[in-house]
Amino acid sequence: MNYDNIISRVARDIPPSGIRKFFDILSDMDDAISLGVGEPDYQTPWHIRETGIWSLTKGFTKYTSNSGLMELRREICRYQRRRFGLDYDWEHETLVTVGGSEAIDLTIRTLCNPGDEVIIHEPSFVCYKPIAQLAGAVPVVIDTKAENNFRITADELRAAITPRTKLLVLSYPNNPTGAIMERADLEALAEVLRGTDICVVSDEIYAELTYNGKTHVSIASVDGMRERTVVVGGFSKAYSMTGWRMGYALAPAEIISQMTKIHQYAIMCAPTTSQYAGIEALREGDIDIERMRDDYEGRRRVIISGFRELGLECFEAEGAFYCFPCIKSTGLSSEEFAERLLLSEKVAAVPGGAFGKSGEGFLRCCYAASMQDIEEALERIGRFLKTL
Amino acid sequence: MQSILKLLKNDGRLDARRLAVILGTTEDDVAAKIKQLEKDHIIIGYTALIDWEKTSEEMVTALIEVQVTPQRGEGFEGIAERIYQFDEVESLYLMSGGYDFAVTIVGKSMKDVAQFVATKLSTVDGVRGTATHFILKKYKESGVLFDVQELKQEPSYQL
Image 1: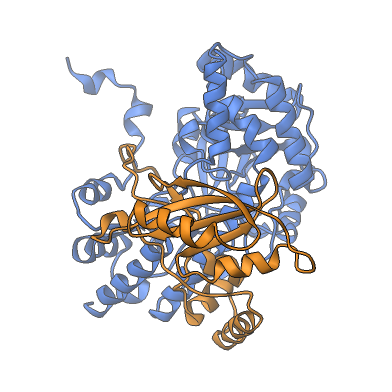
Image 2: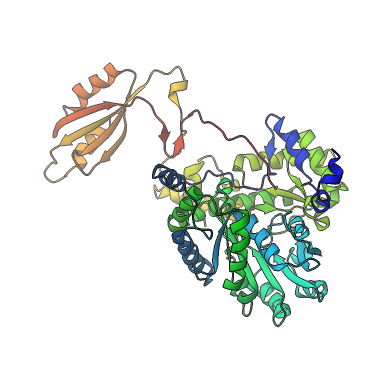
């Protein structure tokens, strides 16, 4: 068979994620330190795991309703209200999904006709562009800038809008930069969007992880934005539950009901065990979030000040668990830098170029690693810089 | 906001310089605060957690329930003082419930511990009875797990 003719063009043309080879090298190394992964280094808190086990012993192993367990949806809405001041109806405006990623996929597929334009800011998580392309939509990239702290400005948004713009993907706190958007930044974007039919999908998977005393603001809480916004939340980062695959979407009933249709045919429902664990997380897990967040805050200060002491510019990342030092002063491309660093000093980090062309010249370093590893990694990076 | 105390509780080796970076403050500030905490006996000492099982040191630990008759004028304090001054006593707590003091004793052998209980502890004025429980295996101490064999999930890397 000639598979070239068999595979769909759209699938074939999607590039594979660019960093696989680093991790292949890494897995063969002893005493390597990875600042490369994009997940918490904590175990899911025991009371949450234990609730998952309890649900299994009770035999709760059937499908749930397509939208997710009622009790879980109620808890999601209570949580969003107490933490971020968002008001959603659990019955008609809430959908439990398989991770935040499914919610993003559903949103784009629900809103976009072929040829519609989806505005994506980069550097950003790598899934938005391929998902838009799979839906037949056209990605339009805004390159955010280090001098703007990697935030989108109203002018940049205005310049990217055309009569075909359907959707803006907002991804803050941001992977890979660690940037956040504050209320004033969001107000400025809202000013551009009000009075248009442009929708927003706001990927708030890192909403719980903000620092320097700042708290996350959802664009859905800004005047005139709720009606056009799909808020994507999840359990992966807040409760260290990446493998449970639990996320959700909050949006007006007209959008959620359409998303639920696609979810119903493609997925059925999120894993039942994970949904029970999710109820426990939302009810009893606020303290876990604070504990992990406090730990990350300390590590964040250590890694950012460490890079600055090594002479690398490193902007004040105030969210997620990434910092994004600039390595342009070394004259190396981000991929060369990452590869040579890994081979010579056994420290893995992800080249910024993997997150879009505006990420070139930067390195994504995840500080969801132990303090010892972070300090050791900084020492090794310091040694590496001296050899350049 | 993390406190100096919580950070030191997790890692007593953190020095003022590293604490200052973690807390986003100055080294002098941290050093002054630690000095004050030590002066106020809020920080009462620094120690290492050791898995003695892995050493050649012969050692047994026992948890002893002690029932006492509180003494006129001094309640439990006088008896506590007479107990905690023995070098063999590693910890001493006043308890609610079925007995009064929980004492942990460290000795070289079970015989050693039994000897201590019989000749030293039981004979303290006011002690009415003891029940000795030997510790067979330690899993977790001060929030830290001993070296338990764990199955690890196979590694995977996602962006």
